[in-house]
Image (tube, rainbow, N blue to C red; front, side):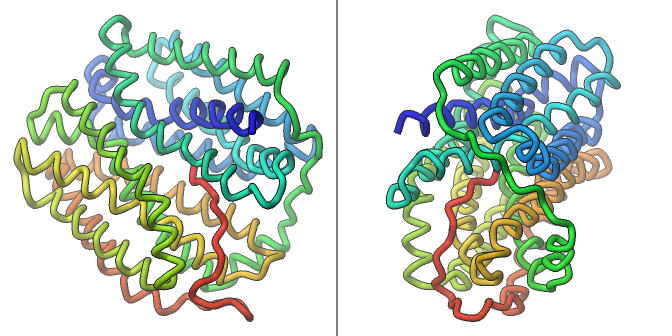
Length: 393
């Protein structure tokens, strides 16, 4: 299982390098003189790059191979972080954020291909579950790591530390890593068009966009919301944002069992109901005690979506289209959910309040419950179809 742990560390640095801007946002906003909407738009730039990286990953891995693609992703990501730590202008920072997202986006398809190529099929479930620890640990530790480093370093120094670690890990992987010698098949645009013409694709993509927006999108703006609107200290806000993701690490395994027992549509209905309700309450009910409790409940409710979501996605498309459908749904969901929702919340905070953005997102999530009935299943698939354990990074 050693190759798995190599990839877990690389994936952890990959996602932490992107979400670390959330706990750093109050400091960056103050130093660079950004408004809330401008600060939120930084995550849109990362997601634009990330989607471009995902789209291009198949071409890069078909030209190089999966192992070299992972190496390129990790080392160039680290190099961009080092350049960002020396960036002197907001314009330069924005361009570098797009590059950061693009190089980060190269990893996931090749990482999954390398992992499944090195591990026997009967152990894929355990290996993928271990690999999925990386993003969950990233969500928990990024605010805590950032706050610890901010005691000794400016925010640019935090980026330099992460960049150095990424380059170091890339070097270790180049010397001691195994697997990934195969080249990928380049994507075919006619197949992508076939999937995009299917109305079921847009049903599940919309659900993923709202779920990722309620999760990663809200997470990226949470410290700013807790500091500016609830009045918490920055250190406490970052601690709450990080620890709120802790219960989800355990719950993700149970949510898969629940999905298998009651079916993906019922599981998704429960997930959307709880997710929308707690997001709505975050915007309605405020207090130094109740708000942190709601943050934890809202963060925990989102974890339940993905096993059921990928199960529904698996049932919608036949096996030969399933992998590409997963990639396309991830791109659309990440771009809208993690890219568009943070700046939207930020701009609403400028004209009204952060709470208004959370209320609107909660209402939209609850309004999507009737959409669940419109997703078709492919022939031979039912509501309890097996689901791929694919991480959303």
